[in-house]
Image (cartoon, rainbow, N blue to C red; front, side, top):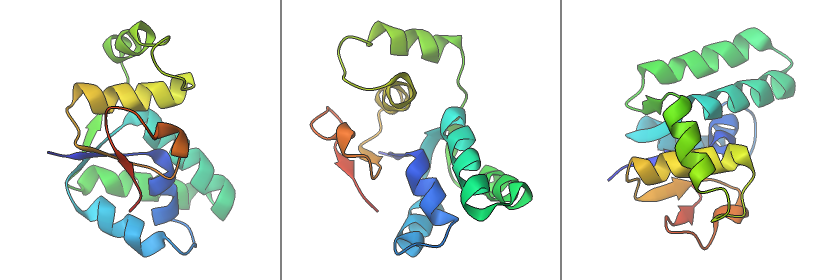
Length: 125
């Protein structure tokens, strides 16, 4: 089974922090993420690095990885809205979590603790 990678793991992989290498290793394995995560990560990286081109190149590099990038489309959005009352997550995190559910991810890789206690185990790189 594959792990879902949240935006904050992607951000940490491309910015200076103590978790950078662990996050990069996670991105070198097979993973699933979605286009919304990529947009969130791009935005954060561009602010942290103050460099839009660096952020764009970082995200584009994931297109060449072993990762599967799921597009945010109306079906994924609809599936997320169907579960809006089941989970105490904001809509962005709900879309990420529902992506992981639909694609049978075995693990949810994130530094966000509000994913704790759900059907898919959250872990950190």
